[in-house]
Image 1 (cartoon, rainbow over the protein chains, first blue to last red):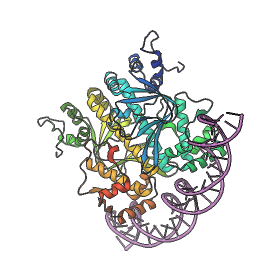
Image 2 (image 1 turned 45 degrees about the vertical axis):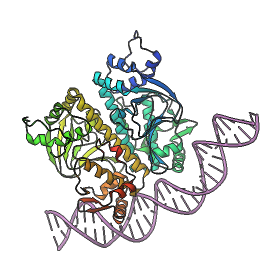
Image 3 (image 1 turned 30 degrees about the horizontal axis):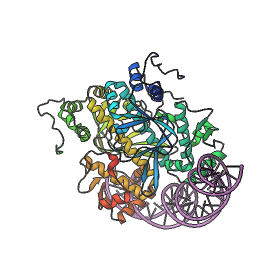
Image 4 (image 1 turned 120 degrees about the horizontal axis):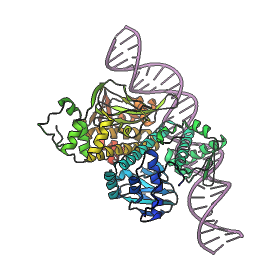
Length: 260
Length: 260
DNA sequence: CGCCGGTTTGAAGAATTTCAAAGGGAGTGG
DNA sequence: CCACTCCCTTTGAAATTCTTCAAACCGGCG
């Protein structure tokens, strides 16, 4: 419990499982970043009847065409959403990290219009829609925060639209890196300007509308410009100001309450 | 009052102004397309304390950086959202037609991350956030439908991402035309495969991430392929199946309850 | 009539993709 | 522990799509 702003859950509570309570912490933290949570709100989140599953890389959490009866919360690891376009090409729509509920939309949109897949080994909590509907009704405050979360998701999509539609490959990839770093930072997953970086270059190509080859060339440029350094599954930002500048990055669209 | 599915508002009601009630009809119709509205819901919408304004083309309804205290409903005409990218270039994020509430998000995201502008002469209703918050609390059913609406907005953004990221200019523009036609149809604004079409080619370029010149060439191809015909401010689809095919268009992402 | 914004066309240039192939690193089975 | 495989990265070169530049055209409007 490091984050100062986080209201501490009542110590004497006896939740069904301490393990589950801990697993749901990223969501509590996420929601309390955009608004005050009452003790009841926190309890409602922490006692959700979730199913927690460990997933291997490349497992589908939800498929295009599905009519899911639960939503999933990413506890650990990275997932991404994508659609298949025409023959063999693919568009990645978003990346999701700890605390994200990528398919909350399925609460109100019956059929999935895309697929959600793990990129890394992950821990995921599945939350029944029934319970979410119950929460929405019983805790209007939580409902607002969850709604807000889906709106931020939309805001990020719009920024991607700008990125892909109007920026050239170099700033485009730089922008993605900035976004990932900022989001990692918001959930406390950065370490000395370094984030874990599981994407392959092909994956980034599918997200940014570029070919693998070109992504590779952009990374070479980023390296040569001494902006970032990739080694193993880590990415280190060597010059944050320079990267932001090159990317034309302004974090406002992330709507992080506690903007750095 | 043509749509059969529309619950008829109580005839003996005495709303503050028949003119306002009529103006809010597109929203009632839109919401009742995705779920049943109770008589109370309808009343809550029809009696919203709105300000209705006639707008000329090119007027900003909301600007990037604003902290609006109201949202707007498009009653008539077309508006679009955009962001300025770097020097002089622009990305259009979405088009909005009768019944849309393009900036509902501003209810929960304090500062606008883009600008909303009229493209044509329009009639717009401004709805105070205060009243919307009140409705959300008093009519959970309406809240759900409005939330759903913002989720569809997100779904459309994601499809645009695919369109711009992974489709070439020709199918890309074709896809946009299909989407516009499908959405116009959903609100009853089509007429013998024809829709009013106010976009300039430059405007479409800004939406699809293309240059004016290239958009022009795509339109020439569309014309030569006998798929569409543009004259004046009208666009006529000559071969709907062919256009859909060329565009790789599947209307599922629009989540129209009554899919044709 | 002349202007203005939008459309149209040609031609040259740039960004990016595709094709092809080599190099690297991590895990697996022998 | 080595060899082998698989997947990812990297590089070169040709091909393509799209942009930019430049200029003509067109239709409506003051």
